[in-house]
Length: 123
Image (cartoon, rainbow, N blue to C red; front, side, top):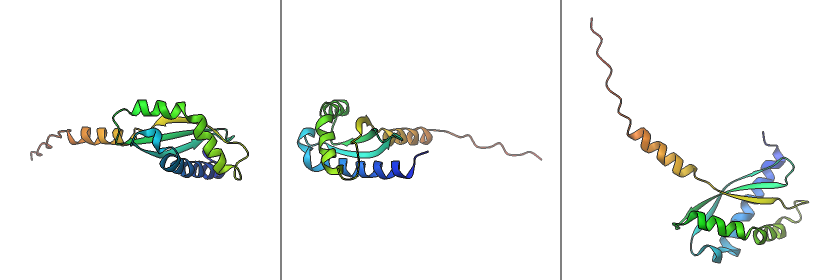
């Protein structure tokens, strides 16, 4: 169960990282559109797990690797934005958010289910 403080910090990090990815570091992504879908933060506020969604790219793993390689720059930019709200800037861990693809796969599976009609009751 997340505390109120964890939710507040996660929301702030999500907002600030979104601005960083869209304005400050968009040249790293070669025209790809990166969205921060969720941020989960540990109770001690030391680690933030950032879930990313990618549009307009074929190589999501390569783009994720570029983001991970530049995590120090990203964390530094985040630190400049949250320096008055947080005592320490959390360590950032980046993951691909595949919930949209998973939901699409589940929808396709449900669409292919064939349910035979119920037999008529004989009286």
